[in-house]
Amino acid sequence: MDSIVKQLQKSTIRVDGLFVNADAGFDTEDFRKVCLKHHIIANVPENKRNTISPKESKVIFDEEMYQCRYVIERTNAWCDSYRTMLIRQDTTRILGWPGIVCSLSFNG
Image 1 (tube, rainbow, N blue to C red):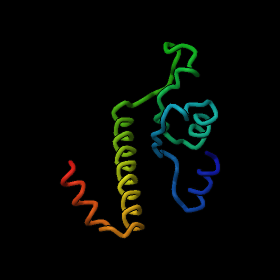
Image 2: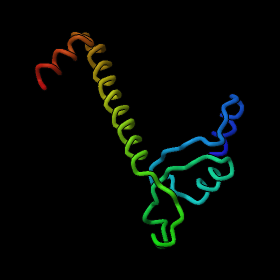
Image 3: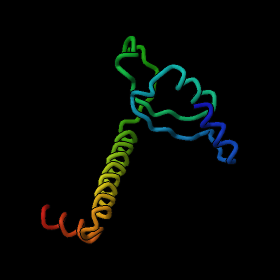
């Protein structure tokens, strides 16, 4: 994370106040310390395997913002799947992109 912050700072992009939405895999003490050090707001759900007791938790988590992250990730995956179909159609030289649209319209 430090290297990412350095790259952003080199590009004259301010990181203080930056909001980071990440999944529970990023819930580590080191990740949270780096975010705190650079004044980055980390919206990361607690990883149940790392948490000692939910009552002792001092982590602020915005569920609604996290759901927005899920929608964006799902949309990106959807776009990637169509790009894969496009490449497959173009390499087989059938109908290309118009053929994909027509086949999706009639099969859906």
